[in-house]
Image (cartoon, rainbow, N blue to C red; front, side, top):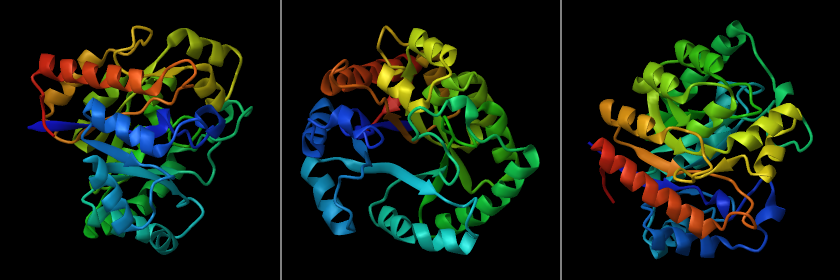
Length: 301
């Protein structure tokens, strides 16, 4: 079994805090990512939106489409309405052989609200999550039938954020729904990343490697600050940064043990004035290569 290494361009092109990255272009980000050695990139908002235009754009830099964000509204929509809303993205991702759509409920999230404490995020009951999961299963079955897996992204500030939320969502949904496993969001939420991986390895379809600077996170919690405050303050970083606190060797060893064969994607939104995107992205890439070699996990292009 083998993995591929991809990256989200959020370090160069932050859509939530565009002022942070206003001096960086998508073209420059693509050039950096390809030069470093990344095999794929997740779709960004500033890339071409039409399928053939996006295909040409990716081919120009020699990278694949390794996923992409979808702002979901299934909590407030019917399954049929949501199918219609995401049909174009599903069709495009199928045509471009993307491994999944990164699906995250955004109808009630506070993740994009500066100044709104992450502690005030919507917390649903188990029954509410189970009811949502039943709807989500229908959508995931439909999307898989179109050729694209839905990988659900637990996210800070969202209704599926911590280990308990993930347990309920996975328990209530069918196997067609995959799980996007994000180390940084799990740690931020107070979960044990390895324990979550142990429990839900059979549902993990896509992986984000994101590290956390613990002193910054402690300050965010102490000040009851927002998710965007955490981003701007430097809570996140790439694997391999000595300031990070997550044990990626343990995570990578678990991926090897479970025969994971998907993408490992570096996703670490940072202020480029503090952390040069090309420097830190290379740091993340080199670290993952070394961690995979240590774990016996083969990396392929």
